[in-house]
Length: 117
Image (cartoon, rainbow, N blue to C red):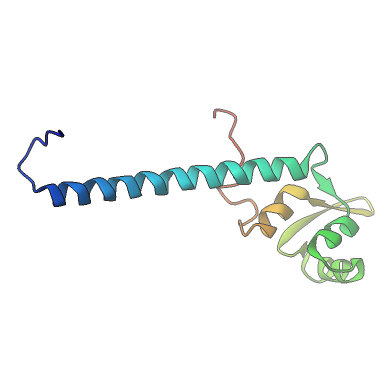
């Protein structure tokens, strides 16, 4: 038998428990989704943190000419800043993956663990 420190009906107590369980489940769901994003991004990015425009275009499902036209027009590719090193362009795989997963590139919640975690 459960002892409740204040008088409350069994139905009200059960409703309170269901509400609490829903809050806990929602909190766990957010943590699990964060961890899954972190694992997916680190798996995809691997050791190479940048990629060529041709590879970024392939990941986006567009041809490289369209990608280069977008870079020359906006300085970015699908909203992801593009680095120019000499005559070459490089695209951050992390930012690109975030964009593809619907996370704002460079946003505060990247799904990656900070050093202190």
